[in-house]
Length: 110
Image (cartoon, rainbow, N blue to C red; front, side):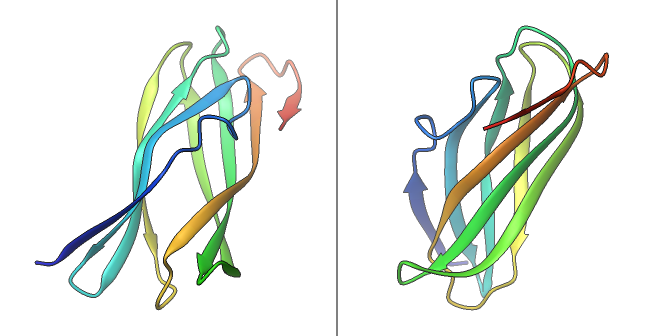
């Protein structure tokens, strides 16, 4: 099993409410996956989190994906594992992060 990782630091791009850690593309065999960890640092429970990504190939956008997580408690971390089905994809970029508070406090888009 061939394993290739492309490291990406999204800390500076993450919203105030969400931090992304150890985000990387992993290729195993002929399949590519995005893996990492999301952390709710908002101090409150979040009903829904959506992270919009651009998928890159040679620096150009070749697709997009959305990571969704629901019912994320304050200070809770969750594992991100997303299949990327675009041949030759070699990078990604976080476009936006949206979060909705559990008590319908509103939407914070970053």
